[in-house]
Image (cartoon, rainbow, N blue to C red; front, side):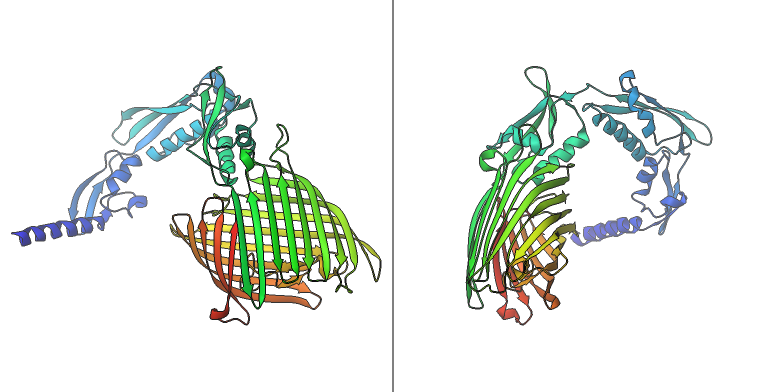
Length: 525
């Protein structure tokens, strides 16, 4: 008996599977590709309300689509207060069209979206349908009834934060302005910008609500994210001991203030960096910031560089920066070939980001570019005064290939634009954890530098990445251009305040057993 029931079950399974693969006959050409179990529902959604299966024979089913439902007229009803919005300009269903439910829903969404971005967050749209029938077709009269709801002007942001982040910081990061008209698109973009700051997570979507004084506010529910990191690394490679100490904070005491300190030391080399930024001045979205770099390279030279400027938003995804910079280089005890030099000038840069996460993104694109215009004075063996310029760019493109695989590509370039090749004390460095991971930290230097990386990443729970990588690098020195290549694999883990990274790189002249192991913590891309 059990075997008999098993045979019946298998026959039904095969029959169902076979029915799904049947050839469909009798429908318009655009629906022939549909399977038997979906063709009727699809025809109904596209205006053939009388469609039915007449019969089936072997692997063929015969369908009668019936009369088509045709739009006879379209009427849009809107109140006088919204006439100036020209709702009619969004009409995309016209007389003579076949009635398609998907297109009707889309038309309703267009009307509501226009109103939501014009101060009416509670807008809605319904569709009334009148039908008459003839022997050849079903005539349909569509009436879209648009209800705008209450007009909303937002007086302020009301932030309900689980943590210390201040309401003024939330408003600044969302580029919110008091007494602005409710616009859903601006709120959505502002919320994404708030998330990209990496200092809070946002619970749901912000929504309008009346405060006790009867004024409309935008309610934002958020929770502080860990935003302070202290790390230190000691490494040993090729008989060279090196180490670094880094402190970074993105939201000091919930004020949005940023500060970072970095100390690097190896045999003969020292480097100290300091950065500080105020989030805004009074009610203005202008963020003043200061940067200082002190560097000692063996006994060859000592250098320092200082920057002072302001950052400002140009749009929800684009930020700009303008500032002053000055630098000075002094030869060390072994720097007979190094001249003293000083420079000062202006710097401008821009940053565009559509990344969904500022630390460990799943999708999006980011680009940072900067340029300087400087006056340079060198003296020693000869006295030289000349204009100069430096340029730098960095981009990362994160493309989700599947649910567990993302493809990362990174590009970086830096270089001087001057009449003559500047002295080595003004060069940039290449090699190590940030670019060429098969080589020692700052192993190469040049007056122009370029590097690229390709990383297919395996993503687990959006907090743990495993990835192989391929690195390419090039630098321009006194002898000309040099090209380097490396490869390896790494692991990155998101722990709240930042990403902890372990990467093993193999460069030229190294075997898989003699590669370099790099550790690091980063708090943003």
